[in-house]
Image 1: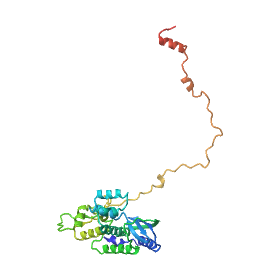
Image 2: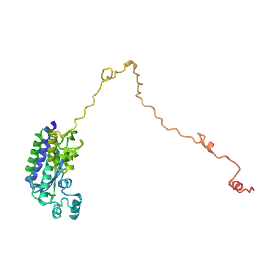
Image 3: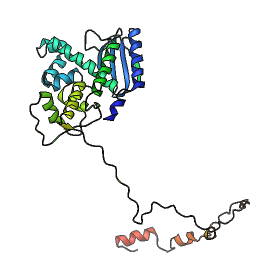
Image 4: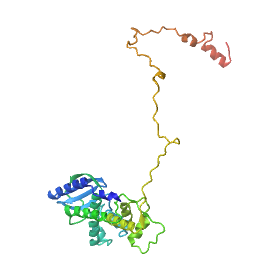
Length: 310
């Protein structure tokens, strides 16, 4: 797990921190699009972050649906009644599918989780897009400084674990033949979903939990021997030839055996002044294809056909 030394991209972090500090200082309202892996988008109102989304972290909708708090049918019905609203919090509360306090907690968790995923990855650049009414999932925004401090604190906490890992790198497997003992619901869900191909980020989307929460739990399960990460692929050995010698260089041919190339004439070939002209009838094709001259005519042909020679 030596890769955790590079868990914080200093150049990318400085780019993101500079862009966020500028947005806060200028009380910017709109989108801050972060290009990178996984990257994401931060929504600001008057310099405060009121929403964030990233491919590297589940959003509020995923947290509600995958965790079973709200069913897919209930969500589709509320979205349809709201006219396609991206975050129909009012409809969810009005229909009793979720409480207002519960939605606030879910949105704040998703906000911090998205910023953590952006900071934990690679940041290549930032672009601002002004908007009069930015997309907001939280009523009271968070300061840029607080979000960055929380993301770096989480990365530092991950690095101190006995088995630290990155959210998008290691792919754990359940350890076969191990007595699991009493498990928490999250541990049981991770054991059911871990398959050696899914990262902690993938498991977070499947279980409907925050990517930071899942990453920490996977690291603890690695330390407890419940999960294991596949070893790096063994390099293919390169064997020498049977004679014990390596690849030999081809020896150049002796100078005597080389065929001397014909000398290239410096004088260009003569070009005729006029092209040869074709004489009519020189090939004899006209005589060969000429029809045979006979005394028969078309009238005689029709007489023979009608069977009445005249």
